[in-house]
Length: 600
Image (cartoon, rainbow, N blue to C red; front, top):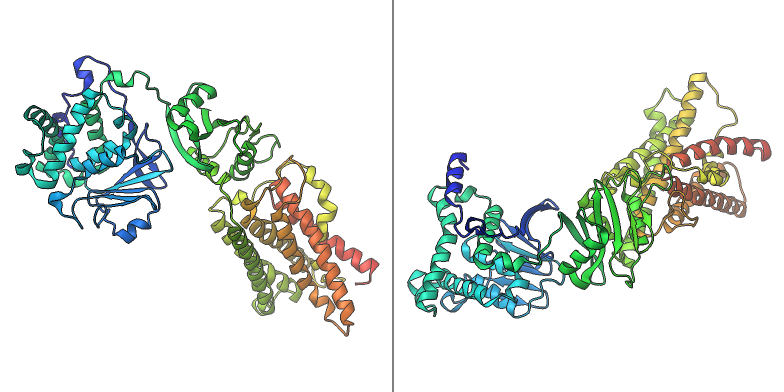
């Protein structure tokens, strides 16, 4: 857009209906544009569950509209099909272009008014309004839908302004100016409504006459016209009891018809809670109030609700990188009525991330989703281990100057570690700390060290009694064993454990002791992998089948026990590195014990 033309146009569009020009109190600005999920939406503070998306490219067929989800309203051409009211799927197409007789069909703004007065509940669930071209018919429809609460209780004076405007604009938009004179309005009401519509239209006409319409931001344009409609309909007396928060970052469904609202304000949590209840009523479940930068207070707004704040604390402590366990008390916590973010550092989650985490904290994970995650974890472990065992066969050829044992260890460890790192990066959505790639926290996990060392048993049985060669060869051998230890932890306690970590409660640094489901899963898979890794030690020479089975079973049991300890350590330390160190040490200690005590 040409900047000079745009400024000249803007200077001409100062509204004479602006109450501040008449020396009265200005109306509150209730409309804002916000970026959410990489989508720009128009919001009204008094319609917190309704968002408006405006894009000139929107043009959906009926089948495409149904794929947008529930609680969708399409306006004036955004739906490429006839008018539709589907109360079951909660999809509405307010249109008078396709699939209808235009002469006998109400325009979009009048359809919106009838829909609101017919009892459409826009406070139940999250609604999305889709519009393409922000002509006056569409903008009036958006105004009616965003002001659904006030429209139902308008004063007689306000109704006398709004309804003639809707009737006249509907007649003009549907049938043209020639037939608008027989729209049924008395002459005085007709003239007044026409004057107001002409004023609201002057912005669109000015942009079009100067060639700026196509480059005008439709969302910003709509917000400006909505404010002008406010000035025509309301007076400052209509907002005597109106109060607002400094900023509402967003909200999330938490089940049971309740929502969590994340906001910022200088008042106390109880004052903010009461203010939010005016907007949300009984739907308000949790208030997350930012008092200072990154410091939040969480409050359960429904004392007798069947959800606990502890559920939110657990999920936040997993996903917030500020919760590093140093010290253990630096975490989200409190009672089930009120609590807050880590002290003294605060959270490192953005407001929108906090909204998202609160939403998923109370989302029920059905059995099929859990089974899907279990299947994914099993497939990942199997694939990575097979890749490692396959590459062992070719390692001596790829590394001819290395000792065959060292080459074999590197051949297994390198692809497993690389695969685990790449998949962890993808599945964790770049939140590496969630999969254990962080410094260890606390020290209470050291109590598990003797059991965790059993995790090195499968490799310990394969170490030679004495490694031949130079000091350089021996150093590379030690490095290869370290690579194996890191790869095993990255695969089982990092990736496999991480894939299912959000499906069930897990331990935290300094918290209570228990064995979580992710720990059990990773330990069982680790035990199976350990038994398979032990196979080379039982295929050498003739062996009784029963003895082979007993030996493999003992190795699997011991490795699983070590895996349980390693999983608990990973949760309590928040890190895979203590486990990797213990697997490395356990391998050497185990090798010495096997050689001395059992003659391996």
